[in-house]
Image 1 (cartoon, rainbow, N blue to C red):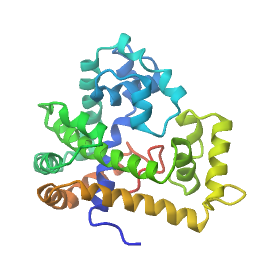
Image 2 (spheres, one colour; image 1 turned 30 degrees about the vertical axis):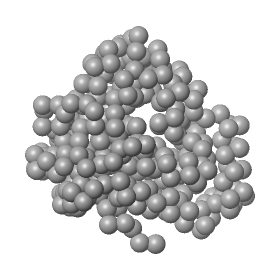
Image 3 (cartoon, helix red, strand yellow; image 1 turned 90 degrees about the vertical axis):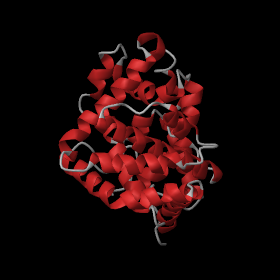
Length: 280
């Protein structure tokens, strides 16, 4: 099946955004604010765009995580660290991880295009994109670049959750399929906080759909189904972008793909990874 016109753009967006999750000093920097451990830093820093959300809202919007792992971090995080400080540190972590790889890239030109693309999004039903869009872009040029790109990343993520839910795929089931097709690591269950029993039930669901065999390996129909989910996500995104937004995305696509390849060469983001991103 053919990719949509903006598929390369979305893959680049996902790759560049993801540095914030894999920056080697992220855990320590969030802990310096008062948070405890990697996952509290993750859920608080990504969720802070929503305000000071509880575990139910974050479980709903993030989709792929066990409610139990989210509840171990929230709402406790908000009594340990200031929400605005967490947001500021998140942008700084991302920018610091990006600077070495993007030194030779035109950040200002890409930022202008990304901001233009983000401006024309229809965010109805897309809570994480709307939350990120409501934040003020930082003054630092690299942070501003990452901010506008993150609006687009969360927009696609919201669209993806909509596609998964429409297909009847729970957070567990979607992760099982990602592992089966090789787009997420074998220890994804532990990373996302699911119990062995929850994971086994999801494997059975995927097997009943004909997407994995008796050994849990992806079948051809499973691989096709996973690609169709990605294709449906990209097309859903395009349906909620106006003409100007789409034009900005097309115009910046090549430059952003080059930036994404530079990010990969810097070693900050590796594949496969828990986010399930595809190579740009």
